[in-house]
Image (cartoon, rainbow, N blue to C red):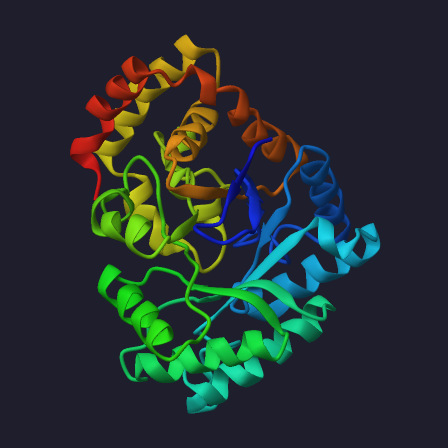
Length: 326
């Protein structure tokens, strides 16, 4: 495992990390999480991603209890959470959902700390942008969160380049803690934001990336070419919105061509896709997901594929996938 600085910060994160979206609580209990976290740590993973909204807070509970059982030294691991949607879509205070106002953020961090059983969260993200709250209010609230010792670094997730730059400029002008990282989707079929929209931010403000969905929600495993398997992510209750994209004929045709390249390299299609995302030097860490040990181990096998991604191989991959990318 190699480690990369998170943007221009001094923090080093593993080039592959482990996330909990969909899996924790829904598919993975505390015992299974503990086992997978241990395997990941043994392989050199030091960053574990979460969010308040995942499984309505229960994902944080599962991860927190698993980490507590493992008794890791706090300096050895990095955990994250994200705020915006709150814990419920129904019957919830207007100031605790779909917002980044000061009241919500000030209380949300306390809830996450309690659920995870931690004194501080390493990385805290604004899970989406909030058009109804002034960015200046959000920046002050996030900076205060760090000043109070409840978070170490803050960043954004799926913000536009203009929004990130505006937040950074406000923080710079008022000598506040600046956003250090962004968490965008990045894979062979979703790449323009990382490769084009954010291009100037890497040098201008030192933006780091912890990217999600390297397998395009499973499309890049090849398992959706004949429909939706019963044990797949798209079959999980509440995830039906993924089906249309996963069964796209043109993209599944490209997946078949990519699989040929993977076979030639002696790896799985999943490993090729994860390695491709990690190959981008702007990416600090690629967040992977798994519901069982075998999936985790296969994902970690992508590390061995990275040296095989020669310029010639990257060109072949690009010829197959770039025209279908958004």
